Length: 478
Image 1 (cartoon, rainbow, N blue to C red):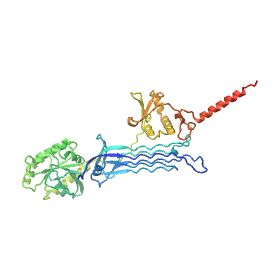
Image 2 (cartoon, rainbow, N blue to C red; image 1 turned 180 degrees about the vertical axis):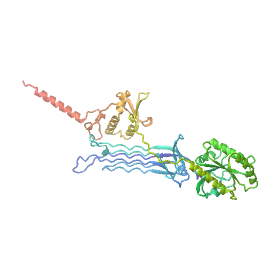
Image 3 (cartoon, one colour; image 1 turned 135 degrees about the horizontal axis):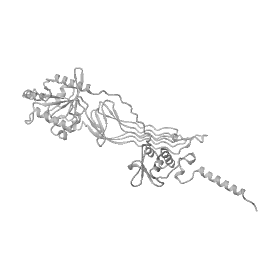
Image 4 (cartoon, one colour; image 1 turned 30 degrees about the horizontal axis):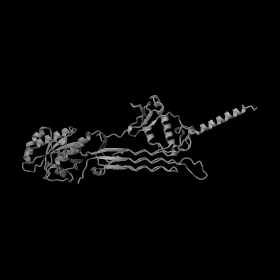
């Protein structure tokens, strides 16, 4: 049964925003109570947060689909809907968040570090919030926006100071078990270690973590064995320790050739050339192991490596090794740049930035793209004429109609707002700004019905009556 997973594909869905409410206050002896529809609640976010108690992505391997709760709709009596609850997903320290194309979205290192993987939708405004001097009793409300849908890849890169690398059965697990309190599985067959093991080592005043990476073999950087799957766990380590077996039973292997093979795989994987190395000749307690270690040590030191002869079973040479690692770890920590506090970057909008673009496509369709127009379209109830008229007014105030005219649009041309997959397409008719005199009953907009407003009809009737009165005054009896 799988107990360790360090790479998963996660499908997250944020909560949808609640719809606004269109309501009118009704109370005895108050015939003009006014609009009292509340706003919809915000949809919940999906947030990835580092939790030190989590060491694997196993939970998301079994259930990769996660969704936050939706916001509640608004109600009458100026009651706003409840916000959706954020979904917080704990991840191990060192988790990298990528999109499906492999681009890094976030690198989560440090307890409490978080990343919003999917943003919840905004709640729609109720008609109480939409009321104005010109539109005293709106017969519509705005719809809640849908939450984000994201597919992200989570990769775990172990956060440790020291990494033990080497062939299978070189004694890495035994070494970490005696250097720290870690209790990895130890057996006398290859690939005993199937998952990275972490241990904490104290050497004087320095405390550091050490990782036992599953054994590498030739071709590991191309995916052979378990190498490619776990080489990523070496990336964050400051010091690399080559654990070489001086008691191998394979006739075609020796410590020097093993070192050359592992170095070739690390070089092929890339990004690890600047890490300091230490060579550990392990199993010197085995017959002929000490002789082989003394034989190859001069060659390794001639290459510039610091060499330590140890025995995990007899526990010899461990103290010198632990203090040497502590020294390198302290040097690596001192060389790191100091962390600066996060600066607030303000990027003001350009003076000539209208917030949207109008492009004429090859088929003659005019496409409007921009955050505000697209959001307004998502919030509009197209079954309500007054809501559509309100959208037309907002687009006109933003300058969309003026840009359409500049782009060559004429009455009856097709206009699309938003991307192709979910655009709203309509035949464009230039409109005028709507005042209170343009509105009829709640939920209606006479501009969309081809009818003249009631005020205009009254003026026409008055003009007809004046004309009849003038004709009567001019009438001369026989």
